[in-house]
Image (cartoon, rainbow, N blue to C red):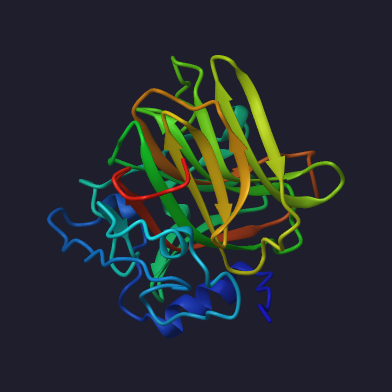
Length: 276
């Protein structure tokens, strides 16, 4: 069972105790040239490489479908390298609240995005891009009683994210939590110039789960814990970059603070046998 930690001090206390001396107060201050994570091949049923809790969300699409070795990965076991990441310092979603580097924390092999009750939150984008390929991340949410905060793992076109709008009208949210229709649950959202497409799942987002997407010339496929939950013959065509965001939707749920915890993020090329 995953126990929710409703308060900022509770989560920060956990990070400080389990990872003393490893927290980056502001990832934008991370020293350049930090050692890169070693990306090994995913195994069927693999949860993570940091020894964290594995009671839920163990299976991964990469392991189940044998995607092989990632072309790039983030294990979040050290401060963020500016060569790898864009840290948002900008107005929040739809201009509400603010995304600040001060709301990011690293510890216990995880990245924590913290949203305050006043709408000050966080977001980052990876400087690693590809048009077609596969992306996967392992995430859980501490809602803290605040469903006005929504965790997102998404693909934006080059230089997107942080409210920089897409010039190609393309977006893929392979995890986007919305209170619709009447339940706080994961949403897969695909936007192409041909239209919008989406699907919902009933998994509990406060437990660990892996969320993945494959984009190929044959279409777009989404996965939760290695199982397909979205498929469309439509696909994006531009170069895409993965982003992690905790977005504030005031008036769209109960107010308060919340946390998004990310265990890892991995990118795979489209060069192994897949489902596309």
